[in-house]
Amino acid sequence: MRQDPKNGNGSEPDIAVGGPSLYLVATPIGNLEDITLRALRVLKEVDLIACEDTRQTLKLLSHYGIKTRLVSYHEHNEMTKAAELVVDLEGGAKIALVTDAGMPGISDPGFRLIALAIRHHVPVIPIPGACAFLAALVASGLPTDSFRFSGFLPSKSGQRRKLLESVKDSPRTQVFYEAPHRLLETLADVVEVLGNDRHVVVAREVTKIHEEFLRGRVEEILKKLKARGDVKGEITLLIAKAEEGATPAASDAVTVAQRVKQIMSEEKADEKAALKKVAKERGIGKSEAYREWQRGK
Image (cartoon, rainbow, N blue to C red; front, side):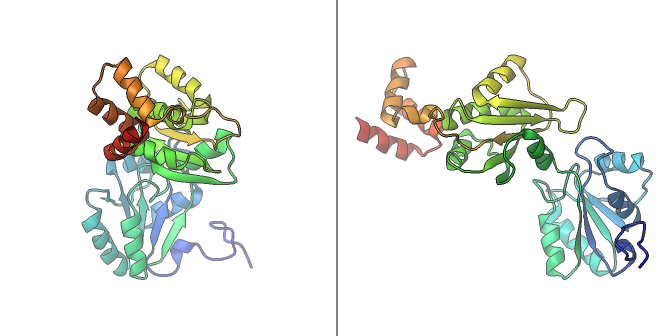
């Protein structure tokens, strides 16, 4: 059978056959060249492109001379927009779903539309491509045989510490997205919960002009970033699994009662304020901290 030059598998191009479909198209995470030929063809030939930010997607389409109609689909309108797009799909439309960068549905809008399309028996076709956390992972130098991607870390310190506590003894590389303005806070929490010697990788601006990988012990990386001042750009944070003989986390070195006494002494704080601070440090409830304090008296 003669191979079709468009898809190389001996069959007709997928866009030219069958009925309506929802195409999940990966777009560049920085460098505009990081897009597949198949993705460009699909974006040209679909009836409609549902995108997170029409201005951002228009930059990509203009770069490649693509004039397909755009419609806005983001976290604030997806409840209603998903249903409207499925109606279009059932009416025979071929629609591409894209986000501002990377693969639709990965820490970005898309799940609601994808699930609804499947429920209505509309074919959902992934068009693979760039993905920030995978690019950061493979270049991190950390083990890739077993890893866990958990999206964005919680914005509140207590919840973040609780999550870090839950992965303290995990045998997997942990991968997260983090906002640049919270990165120093988060690394301080890693020191507190996982210890000074835990190896981390901060991948910043992957595929962009100022791409950077900071690799090493978390305490060293934190000092280096503090010296810089403001941290900017898209951040992926990777945390190595615990090593045998690693330095215990600072929060494990003393009991709750000892830590409360330490804060009361060093910061001249009263019992209530010290308990509140310890609870926040360890990601536990104030009542739990109080019980530990009473037991340790």
